[in-house]
Image (cartoon, rainbow, N blue to C red; front, side, top):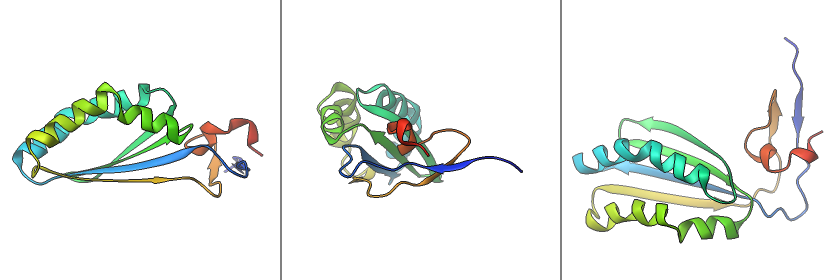
Length: 130
């Protein structure tokens, strides 16, 4: 097996942020809303200014997690102020017990390792690959 493994030397103070958010359906309404809107959530996030990539994973039938990579915290904050995020939160306002939502934001300190093609942080800093 022959392929290259590389890493990115991140800038000393990277602007990029990683946003981790999860959805757990707590009842039938939340379950159907989550699965009906999951692809739209991923698509609208990917299209947002400053979003470089979105990765989604299924944790259980009633739980998903999404990780998105953003050029800056400012870009992520702008997304929160936009129409797609407002639409996502409308359901929560009307059905406060149907979903458990959680999110965390990280500013990377170190690069990961990559092979074959740039993913995640490597898409944010492709010129720094070595």
